[in-house]
Length: 295
Length: 312
Image 1 (cartoon, chains in turn cyan, yellow):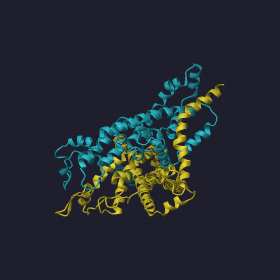
Image 2 (cartoon, chains in turn orange, purple; image 1 turned 180 degrees about the horizontal axis):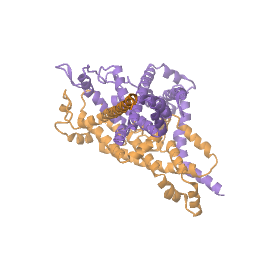
Image 3 (tube, chains in turn yellow, brown; image 1 turned 45 degrees about the vertical axis):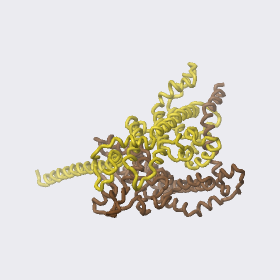
Image 4 (tube, rainbow over the protein chains, first blue to last red; image 1 turned 90 degrees about the horizontal axis):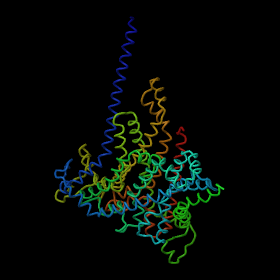
């Protein structure tokens, strides 16, 4: 064996060794980066939970504790009564369930008409609907505020539910889904004399279930997170939504407020969304990646 | 025969949607335009029988109102600062997530968590993290500087008044940027990771055969092929940024600023709602239309810049 080939072999060995090292370093670096970022993302949640379990003097210590010395579960019951969270939960749940249910019916019927039925002006109408999606919601809010006022809906659940029942985006999403279902199924059902409603219920809805679940979750999240519209039209005690109630109950974010109780309230309000997310992760992430709207 | 039956059936099924859209979507478009061009329009006054001249006074008033310019400034600063930072961070995280196998799903779930939170509620958590609690008059110092300041002190820096009485505008803006970026990451990571996973593996295999370096693979393969998603994320980021409102309410409360300077961090959307609640719907409409035009222009500009760099 000549010396050059030996040297070449050694070179190759050295290079693969270097590549391996690079790979290991790269992997460690990647994981380190991701873990640090994950910690930053998680930190506020951790801080919320441990703060919510501290006594006020402990919270105020110059050197903070990273686990409460004395676990104060009492903060949670105090938060519940201070912010009247029970009432707020019920209000929000009511608005969320009713508006989701009604919205689903309207969306399914419209999407069915656009996907399966032939009628004059279908394409222009659909185009016009899509065009409204480009206009920012603030433009509608101003007039809707006046409309709701004139209809005498101020301070009622109706004002919170009705203006947002139709979402062009959801109609669009479901129509796309319905169109993927072969038309032959519909024609076969027609031949068999099945009614539209029965066909929808037996065939279309089961096949489009993932989209419907995504819509349901996004709509419920919307009710849970809505703030501006409820603040404008129904900020009274009987109709207050959870976010508004939370914000109103703890107006001070600086200075001398009772932070542990405040954090307990925030934790209570955040918990349901977390639970839903952990159970239905797939649907939420799918829905969000297609819609790109928060709440 | 079937055709005509389908006709009325279609309209029957569409009727609830159309009725609601006419009242709450179509009518507002016309009415908002109308109110914007009626000088000093207010709904209460209108119901009381007052009439208003046609004119552009509302628009002039909005532009002339120096608080509106402050709102515009705050909104623009938040947009320009948060969109590039959150996009770049999201891209790094998405690329890193895409390159690993173990823990990928878990980390992906963690990175999505901020999305399923209430921006007002978690804003309150951020406020406590930046907040100075309990000023102690004897020692002339705060009892606790808040966890963020403690971290700064740990690394040898000076504590800063972030959101309390006497805090500076810059400090307030920094807090908002941190919070908005934290909030904006999940959606961007989700979209970019989805894009990365749909890139054909063959490109990477080819690069491997050629022995292309990692950084070059990123700039020459990943980013160009990801550019449509990047464009989407940037454009929606700007649109969302110009509508920023509730994240500020989350941290500062409805005062929209530190205790000694309420309204300092008000945004365009905040301006519109303030005018609306004060029964100055003409002014609110003009403000909303100006916001709409700004968003439209920025989006068009983004599109133009992006078109040069996006490979579909």
